[in-house]
Image (cartoon, one colour):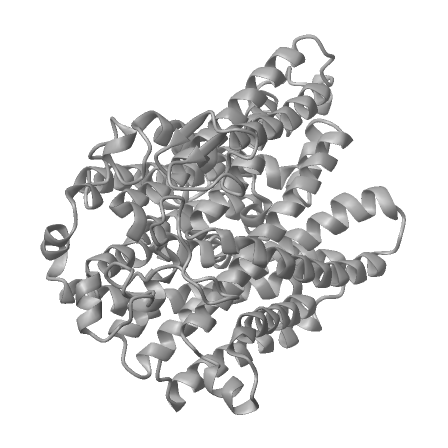
Length: 599
């Protein structure tokens, strides 16, 4: 990579700007509410862009590009059936419960609806999940910097081993994110997420345009790839006839229902952004505003993955050899712009259980940037990537410090301290979250697609939690004891299923099969979908059955927490185009059209 002065200036300007936001907001962080909840004072459009950007971290940009290269246009299901319906549901039905209950976090809402032990369990599991998600973003950023040789010149000049660049990049990203979250809290994270949204659009729209033109447009892309890669629904009747490796039921139940609703409706990472608005009406509009650009993002983040596979860069071993690559070169063992995966510590190519090189799909978008972008534009593209990593880390860390301070520290360690004490604890929790994220970054090395990693984590945490919320919000008979036992059982069911199953091309261990291998899935994503289905179903059935034999809360305590006992939001005073239900109908029409066009 040949970065020039203008490229470095663009990246440096971004880092100065994000830290500057933190310093500018520090003087406004006077109470814990200011730090953890942005004072509940932000407008809906700001929070709407932050709502989508909170999910637009490394897992979205790098992970979706990787999944596009690995699974094809079927990856769009993560948006068109795996996000938009759930975002509509949370805006229309669930946000009035969250905002109206005055709960400061999702675990606190569980305490209000069920009991203290359910809250504690969810707080602990969610804290672990946010640390893993933040660590994955940190890992992806370090791999990007190492792969693009950004600091090679500096390390060579200082006489340091190039293998240290990976560790240096992790520390550097940790310091920057720590700086602006420590100073400005959730408000700083939200404004930086809005900045990141516009950087992603500005950096990736030219990439898609140039890349698509290079491969001959959409028709050229279809001609260069198998039909299954360019048709989102083709082959979904059989798991073995499509790249995603999952049939229509696993896709619909696992992704479109359990994982999708489990994430968008219960994950405090995104919910806290909507709860930072100034009114309940604004909070309801936030997910709906976010759904509009979200529906179009497959063209920015998935399409580059397909283009990377189709780009005739180094398409075979023979071509690579004629280009001067040696037999062990990762590029020679790759496909298109996707090289073989290399261990970031020892520099050796990694292989699957059949002895075939693992493709490093996570490098689809970084290699696209290097292949297509000239000086200046390359700096903008890299800055857009770095911004996605930073915001992904920041969103998870702000969710972690809130849950730790409100739901664990204040509830079980120091209950009656001053507000200033909790504000201070929140800042130190930010430091702890960053350190834990650095540790988990190294655990992500064993996966060649970070989206696979994240969906696995979500199937353990969000999938069973959604069953608890679904029953709790719509069935007043659901009890606290049943919710707790069901939630724990759902997580255990996910763990057992993961331990008994394995993707077809993986070794037993971190990918599954660590108990024994009773079933092989065609892909890692298919295994994740079915893990989520087992977790959700186990929790749902057990919670429903146990609720019938345990004592529920009095109805007077459930007003505002259960749908049938809560006054419905009034929309008549709003302009027709601002009503959440009207916006929802328009989104559904757009969603149906996109699925029909790319079926």
